[in-house]
Each structure stands twice: as C-alpha cells, then as structure tokens.
Picture (cartoon, rainbow, N blue to C red):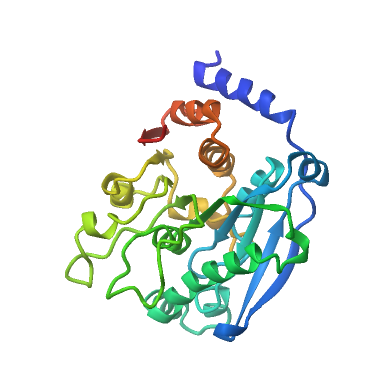
Length: 313
C-alpha cells in the first residue's frame, strides 16, 4: 500500500515534470582571477535552451565540493537543478581539491594539512566572491544575460558546506581574513553534511556568536552518525532554515564524487537530496508556496527521514 507521503510526492513529480527538460551538455572552463593570480576551474550545467528561452533569466546556484573533491562532484544535484530550470556552476578550489591527495605518499596527512590551512580556506571563499563578480559582470559568454542577479544561491558538501555557511555570515575564526561577508548577493544556501563548529578552546566562539550573523535561509541536510553536532548551525542561527536528517546516510553519502567512488558516490540518497534542494530553492528563490508546503511536509523522503523548518514563510 502506498502511504500518503509517497502519493503526494508522485503527484508533485507529475506536476513538475511538465516543465522539466533534459539540461544542455555540461561545459568545463577555467576562469582566471588576475587579482589573486589564481585559476578557478568550473563546470557549468544549463537548462535546456527551450526552458531558458521561455522563462527569461534563470536562478543561479554555485556549488562547492568537499575536501579533496573536484568540480565533477555533486553532479547529481546540478543535473537535477538544471533540469528544473536553474543554472548550476561548480567551482573547483585549488589547495583543497583532489590534487592534495592524488599521488601523495601520505594521503591522510595531506588531507589533514589542507583541512587546517587558513590559506586554503580563505581561497575557497575568495573563489565564490570572484565567481559572483565574474558572472554578474557578464564576463562568461555562455551565461551572459541568462542569470537573474536577484535569485542566487550557494550549495556545498562538507568543506563546501563550511564555505556556504561562511559566505552567508558564519563568523570566521580569528577575524574576517580581509573578506567582506556575508555576501548579500546570495539569497540562500544549501549545506550538505555541514562541518560542526570549532570547539571554543580551538579558536572557536560561542555558537550564538558564530552563527548570529547569518540572515539568509539555509537548508541543512545530514544523516551522519554524529548528525546532532551537524545541526548546531540550524538550531542556533536566527535566520530561517530547514533541517533534513536522512535515515542511514553517512557523511560521504552526499558527495557525489564519481572519481573517488564507493560510498562517496552512493546513489541511495541522491534523489532525495536533489528533491529536497529543488523544493527549498523553489520555495526561496521562486517564492513558490506549494514548494514550501511540500518541503516541510517531507515529500519524496523515506518513512524514517525527518524534516523540520523555522521561519520559512
């Protein structure tokens, strides 16, 4: 017997399907940030030409991979969003990407060193600021005139979720690193398996201070065994938000890193994550009331998954 949640999800899928179309093939480019003497590899997924032509400028989602990942990560998410009419741009962050472990004699040590590097962390945030500058200035011919500057979000997994939270106002340890954050051009964020905040004795600050500057709504999605620690941002920030906990998922379940494979590219949870993200972005960026209701109702989730929201009107 089909339960109520499954029936509602099927009905929503039928309604959405009429407007969906396969996205254009992905484009892989390298953008040069002359000010930082840094190259940012990107992967762009665009909606089908028929959708772009009929709907005007599209909402934009920037995607940030986790530690040791690449611009190819989270492909399942950008493919779903492009199918739904979003422009998705993956950023690859040198200094915390796959190059840190490929060929390393001590993979664990290389990963740990990159995770603790303030320079690599600051570079990630700078990559997002640069990408926004580059795109909104119309400097990417593929997307010139295709992006709605009033509807932009940022999404990421693990270290990418750290990037999301700080771009939207989480306080940086030991000062602001010369960055002017939050970046008000971002209207929403998606944090997949977010990193718990640093403990206070290790340059941390009270959670109320760390997350007090966040004003944009964030969707937090987790399921790792330590999921309670990963919900501090949702519980503490006064900004609107949504928290989804997927039963049985682990930290790697959300990565979508095909090159690493195994649990880092487990398709078990990917459709649910993509569905949550689409509903959240439709609710926030498109101000779709039906999507908000479906999101908070948990449409598309498994029976033991949970979702809760606050302040998402």
